[in-house]
Amino acid sequence: MQILTFGAPTAANIGTIFAAIELSQKTWLITVHSPDQGRMSRYKLEGGDHAGLLALIAKIRVRAAQKLGSEPRVASCYEAGYDGFWLHRLLVAAGIDNLVFDPASIAVEQRARRAKTDRIDGELLLRTLMAHLRGEPRVVRIGRVPTVEQEDARRISRERDRLVTEQTAHTNRIKALLRLSGLQVGNPRRRNWLTWLEQQRDWQDQPLPPHVMAEVKREHARLMLVREQLAALEQSQDTTQASAVPARMATRREQLQRLKGVGPAFATTLAGELFYKEFRNRREVASYCGLTPSPWKSGGIDREQGISKAGNPHVRQKAIELTWLWILHQPDSALSRWFRARTLNAGKRARRIAIVALARKLIVALWRYLETGLVPEDALMKA
Image (cartoon, rainbow, N blue to C red):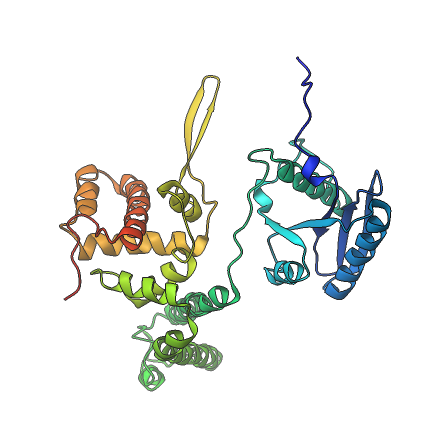
């Protein structure tokens, strides 16, 4: 193997302090490489001690400035996760060039039993940061940090998704309890449902046992609370978002709702989770949704592993749901015709595979519609 004789482009980073922050709820481990020292240094702080972090970086910067004769630049990084983006905004406000790494994109050893400690992870983060700033391609994926307004605007759609999931769970639990006694379920989401239930009898003409009835009433009370919160959330969605949502997101939500089959819930989620970002091409759009293929080609092996699922799960779920509704409400569109042509005599599994492929096409078509105004082919607009 030939040894490279030219150096990596590190001249611009010689006077730079590199800091990798390994975050956890209990402690923060900061791994630092300073130009006034030839080795990595490690410092441990209490979890969430952002004041101590800034004081530590300032101390290292002063020490390096005394030796270099000029104030050095500071570049830091941490993995996206539990702490979100508030730390990034804090570091940027302090004049530090911070990057948020995608944890899944950092290369690690492939041994069956690899060692993993905060010390090892901190060194790996630091080496990755230095390699990225040297200009090495595809070392790591960098997260795009939303603004505070953009991040806050999507809380409504995420809360709604959680409440809908809780509503389904409470309803299914009530149905399961009644089926154990062989009783009809009715509609548990009605407020007068308990009055109706008290009149029901099993095959022995007996009412529900007292403990079962008590559990059903408690479950029904929780169900009614969730439904009240859902109703209040949907009522406040229009008034609250009109004033709190950034103009770009509000405009794109309105554009999406002009298409037949796209309602407020889908438009809000897609505008707040996906289309507020800037994408250079359709591949980036599909990749962010996790709808891109993941082939396995090595030697004589050539197979598909399915979609990557590496993107935003909220967007991917809504994209699949919206695609089924698109076929229902836009049957004459080119996308719906494409789906029917490929699933004419297909089974259920083939239809599920095809709907994912159609979801990718639909998301790309909606992105083009928002960017250029090009309506998806043969799609209908609302009157």
